[in-house]
Image (cartoon, rainbow, N blue to C red; front, side):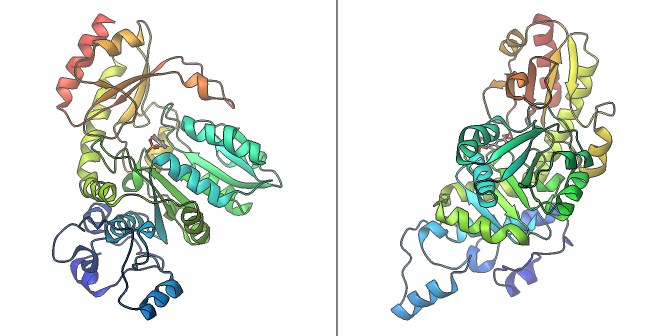
Length: 402
Ligand SMILES: *Cc1c(COP(=O)(O)O)cnc(C)c1O
């Protein structure tokens, strides 16, 4: 939304724009309505529990309209959170709104709990983030919601797994440990034909590289902790919804008491403004490193969907604007832990999406059930914003020593 439109318009709760503004512009302008920012550039941090009303008539009006983006009570947010939610909504053309959560894991559970009721059946990609699997196995199953894990490379054939009580299909592409690419249009086509709801964990690509709501997905989930925040200092999640699922998503988040602090929302919005340039650098450096690793004699497989020979690359090239900074590789010879310990420029730790590089040994075989993982230990790299040649030199010396 440009300057004149921002001043002219109030907060919209109808279906958002048609995607006429390009994403790199939307990410800078989104949610910065003057009634929220005041005369400054960024929406300030509004801390609140109680919201004061001038009189009892206004108090009653507040209850009656019950609108998002209007003052009500601290749990419903303040301009700081509304501004971030609105900015995320604008990145998914056709979306109706965004709910914020205190972590990406809470966003995944908030989305699934808004869709599923006891007796329902869920189709979950076998490449899903491990805590998402735990939610299905340890929480949903005892409450009468069954999950079938499916091969992430299934396209329209997923229809064979649909049961009479199937309610939803959950996708994550590429999988954040194993990097299989899913055929989203084919799966959404089956979902529409069978009247199923689709959810997509879009943490890896973000809506800048793959807006999924315009592809017909109902719920777009992001662990903002990763690229949106971008500085490894805030936990936050979001779910952006199309029209059909919005009311239930909003209701579920509200009755479960989900809210995020204005300080965290402020930092996430600040991160969001530079997302496009950061992703461009993450993406370029990661692809360069992936290509370099391909030629190294000690390297086995390189799991990067941007590589032309990678299985699923055609689907990737068709649907995604570009890759991001997270990918994996395996060793043909040598020890993964020894290699990681020898690295100088890569931190060792969970999470990713910050400005700094990380390396992690992972065992995808432990969290698979539909298709066994046969490639052993995967070294997962998060490529940060350092000089790429320093990172390559570091990987070279570590590979030599492993
Ligand atoms: C990290 C991550 C999450 C969970 O986010 P948190 O903020 O750490 O709870 C969900 N999905 C994917 C793909 C992730 O990488």
